[in-house]
Image (cartoon, rainbow, N blue to C red; front, side):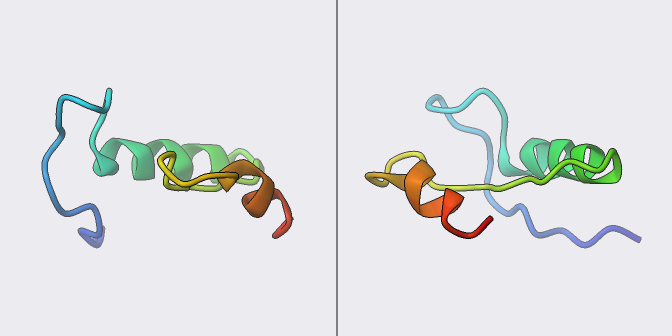
Length: 53
């Protein structure tokens, strides 16, 4: 059974809702890829995220 952690609905600012992002992340991690989900509206989010790898 899958847990609903997405909440909310898609909006005009994104191409997919959070449920779509979670589905894509699950597929990628099952293939052995490291995945990160970040808020794209924050400054330096990629630099900050890369510090966790």
